[in-house]
Amino acid sequence: MEEDMDAVTALFMTGKGGGGHLAAAQALQSCVLDNEDSIIECVELVDAGGLAELAVSEALPSGDDIYNYFMQIGYYTAAGMLGQVASWGVKWNQAAIEEVFEEYWCVKRPAIVVSFVPFLNAAMRASLQRVMPSCRFLTVVTDFAHCREHPWLEPYEKSCGQFLVLGTELLRKQALQLGWPEHQLLRSSGMVIHPSFYERLEKPLKTAKPKLLVAFGGYAPSRVAQIAWKCAETHPEVDLIIICGKNQELYVQLQDFLEVADGRHVVEGFISSEKVRDYMRQAICVLGKAGPGVCAEACACQVPLAVLQWLQESCCGLVVDSLEQLPADLAEQAAACRQALTKLPPNDAVFEVADFLQQLMSEPGPEPVHVNADARD
Image 1 (spheres, rainbow, N blue to C red):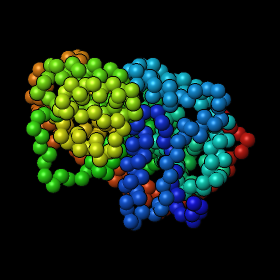
Image 2: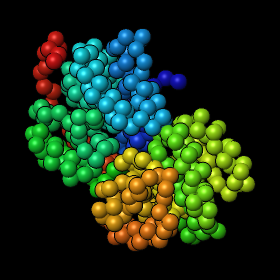
Image 3: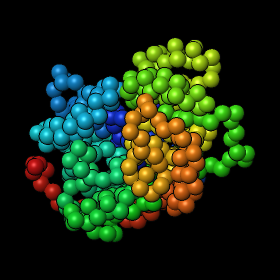
Image 4: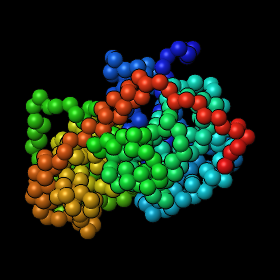
């Protein structure tokens, strides 16, 4: 199928590390393409990490694959440290990575590039400025903050074609400290989540027994099996819904758990946003080490999320000492948190970002800035 070169094309640059970056990109893609009045006619999802790896030795393993493996075996500290290694690797290979992106932009000729990944924004921005200076570049930050492990922001370089979407006040302050002008920032009302989470129920979901959703993001650790058996033992009144994500070994391992439970519990692999939403709406609580996206989804469904301190401080979540030793009064604590969730301000980030894209594409493009094609930091 030949590409329509006249179509207004947006490239959404995502990655394979975890599931949050891709989920946010798919959410915004759905929102943009479902709008009949959208100026953007084509949205392509691109593995930015895969492109960058073309500039590095093929003998080296994929950084995203290593990260996902660490998440799968529960080595969260090691997974976080990989961010520092990735930052070093990108800087070491910056020139080669930029050349790969330059070639890609020249082939695709996008009207706007939207990044959902850290690490690579400087390389993408610089390469775009050289070969397509009129193309707009927008970074949608999918974390709560810019940090060494997840570097999203760089010091501002004067260009009217660069923009940031920031879902927390901390991110906004960090961007301003780095010299970003206010008019090139969109302070969204939260993290970008799929539009399906805003669909109203015609009838409330009713279940015979309370349900606990176990969700650890795109790659649930093998430890989830131990959590499931222990929870079933200590809380027999609760039915479990377990999302394994892309951890196929865990999914297979939990089949024995399902057989013993005689159909009471549910075990899923990698599922759609709509199905995640339905399970969240049935649950009394979401248990797991979830990323910012799952936190935002839980808040949208008004279901408490366990173990995260920032939610507990707003009375919207629970902190437990051990995932294998849940409090006996879990249901009562969750009910109290649910009341607080109803008072949170709405998160309309996906619609705000879609409107912002529409606004950017309605305005004249940035004036080209002369850049020395041989000057690469």
